Length: 477
Ligand code: PLP
Image 1 (tube, rainbow, N blue to C red):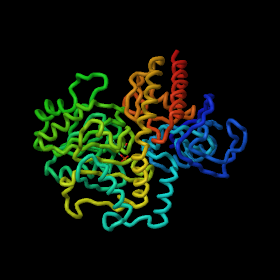
Image 2: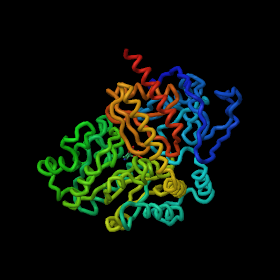
Image 3: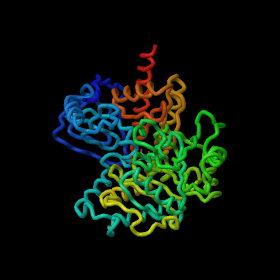
Image 4: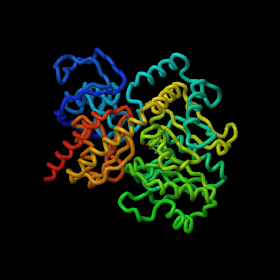
């Protein structure tokens, strides 16, 4: 049975042509592409970080895209949630080109992954150099210079003193490592996470994930001893949440604090709706953990690596976690994740944990350059462009009744809409206009572009969102 993706007529974006300064030169050439350029009518064979976007040439998906979708859907897992029919061919900076030559402005970054932008020349050069040296030699069993270098950099950048690093491949593996280590360190069985949290989909991390019931459906009982508390409520500051709820409800009715190994928290809730708690809310969790000898795990898989304007989001709350999980943007698109901990806490014995592919040298080489670029300016760009984007979206909210709250830090921005259907309709209407965004939470859409995004690109995105919302308003009236 084929899942229906559907074809839509692309809405040609008629905003002003833009000249975009990205601060570095990125060009991909490909003579397979000979599409008429939208402004000059000449053959365009280059894709650069400054290519005009959006540029929509066909219905979506185009014929080549449809062929890929048909082939894919015959054989791939039906659990994959393809949100719209985007078939990516190549990408540069914040520009995505599909297999039919349509160009999109990428405010997804491969779900908050491509920190340095697509095809960043310094990341690609480091990857190519490492590919020519060694693809793999198992960092768990042997020593590799790229692994030692990136772990040294991560330990220096870590919020905690005397840090130690363990590298894995994906965020869910990082969360599994944090689960194992906190139990091993405390010799306690129970863990606490938050409603709305997303920590991954393997069985241990799924026991902490409480984002959508469908992510748990049919998979049996979660790990025994997993409890949940309400996260900060952006619409009700007086609601019983966080440390207060854990003290008053969980510690009196559900678990003795002496049985709790760890509290897992996202410093900004990601899949749950881009919810930003106040610093004091996170500080209260730190105090609770200190009081009861509980390990505080900050899941920075989505918020880390400069996305919120500082290297790690926890820095902005003044809270130092005991364990931090990292992933997504770390290697700008190659699979790399891990945990960073206080040195004394990482006390598992040789053989206690490991991974065949974790800390792969090619991913480590990409990560070392990505982290340097984030330190050298991309985090600051996330603050500058993120503030601009939020200001423009907040102004739009004043004119556009469909927008509720606009939230976020840096380039992690969520927009609330009246309901989930409207959020999905906006996601779709933006795609049809050449802007890639995604829904999150109960009724939000999120913007999480690569950290190289420019103010001009942010302006294009807001203009498209405004146009798309106006069309939804039109549909409603
Ligand atoms: N933790 C957080 C906060 C995430 O946002 C995600 C993924 O979205 C994960 C963990 C799981 O990461 P992965 O999909 O790489 O397993």
